[in-house]
Image (cartoon, rainbow, N blue to C red; front, top):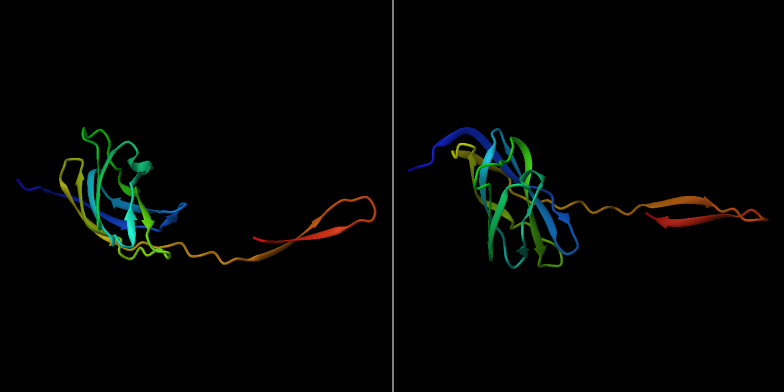
Length: 168
């Protein structure tokens, strides 16, 4: 039997990497006009530049099962609730945080891509899902600014004003 196609539509995209101590979290966002009972995602990446760690659930998938399998160069993620009691609501939702550890001194996320995606609506029908953002962005480095502030200290006589120089 072949899956019937739903009238709904959906899209997925990778977002901006957020730095933790020695790794990054990359949000994967699902935008759909119908409730999603389940989604399967296959990520591809260069295993000499990146290591994919355990993916994290988000607020919109917290009560839904998340299964994953990681092989060199590939990570498969499935998000669904076996009994159908929970689903991903319509709209734009960050559904998983991809945990990535760079293996190079300068992080290179260019190889991390959504390779395949399949989604099903609440009736189990397949939904056409487009990959609209297949590039991880990095936060722009902050330019250090010099901020000078005068701090007045109270002393007996004489009255002294001391300047504290701080780079913020």
